[in-house]
Length: 373
Image (tube, rainbow, N blue to C red):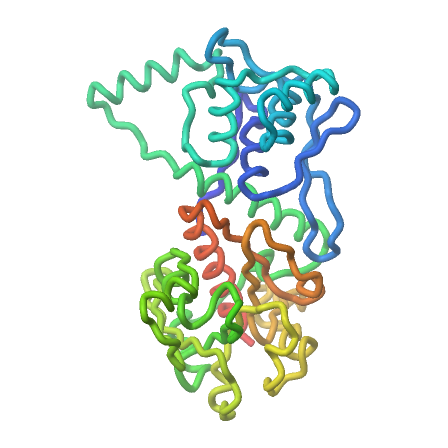
């Protein structure tokens, strides 16, 4: 998967960078007793957890355009909290709560940066390192070699994903993402041996579902989400199945996507490796396994766990992944099932690729464990 990234200033985690990651990922940012709390929702329990806690007076790397003074963290998160208000309404709120105000000029720049609408801002810098940054910029302009930076948007989401994996690991629960497997043969060879035909992923069949056979190919192959309604307006008719290809570790894998299992043979069932979960139990009405106990049933594989013959390594029968859109309610039943939850943003299509990459990372993690079963 991608290389992990965290923002630091003189060895300390950059609070502004963490707030930006939280805003983009729609994670809770709260205040309590003069402190700023960055939270997340535990998908297993539905409980809100505090990941980071900072003093509200902490100076951030976002500076005023007029005075070059640094805004404190409480001013930044209050700006986020009341971003939808008119400026006079926002000013009234800051006075009532006795927090510093972000000027009207700076407010627009700050919110564009925090929401991910812009990749960089000239108002975000650390004064102690600004001179060094300017020197490096001049050196690059002179033709000196500079390393290619990581894509900042991907890096922010990777920070979020990394924290989720660390929380899963710390809870003591074994997941696909906290395990490693050692295949005795390459994955593509193991799949050919274990599966009688092309691996199958089942997608939702409902007309109102986010992903269907009409638009799933664009999303999983290209990392680009197009609504099913748009596909229909272009004259596309829903096929009975879709073939897609994806690269993993220099190998190209082919998957067959279907939205009905009604006429599945035993051979077909042996090829089912994944399902895009709609959130409705009727999606599994015609499945040969009892839902959800057997569909997402966990098995143990003593041969591959940590390469030491332990029984800590688990896998599920089928890799379940639920994808929902930012701004819509997450089905509470989803949290009870052993599925991966991903989110896309309706107004930030450039982030679709992040969700698609996470989909395949999780799918191939499942396949590596299953092929050793």
